[in-house]
Length: 135
Image: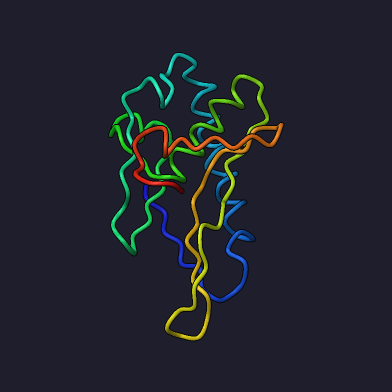
């Protein structure tokens, strides 16, 4: 199933992004509850692959495992679900990497998704699975 969203307007993108990340994490957790022997993203042969500029496709855990690839929101929500399945209250969260003026007088943000552990520790599955350079 494919679902598309178009979200316009100015403002803090985290206001709409966080609920979507939480929803994909919940979908992944439901999958793990039904498939407790599923491999983790770290042991399942998964690697980071960036999407084409201007394209954003969110993948759930079974799609990631079947294709062997994901980008930051895919990998962070999958990892957060893996941790939650073990009782760790981790969460996929957005980090603003940069902000710059855009051509229409607004501000464009470059956002990267990571996993925040309950103690505040940040885990970056994308970097661990092959994303080049610092996030």
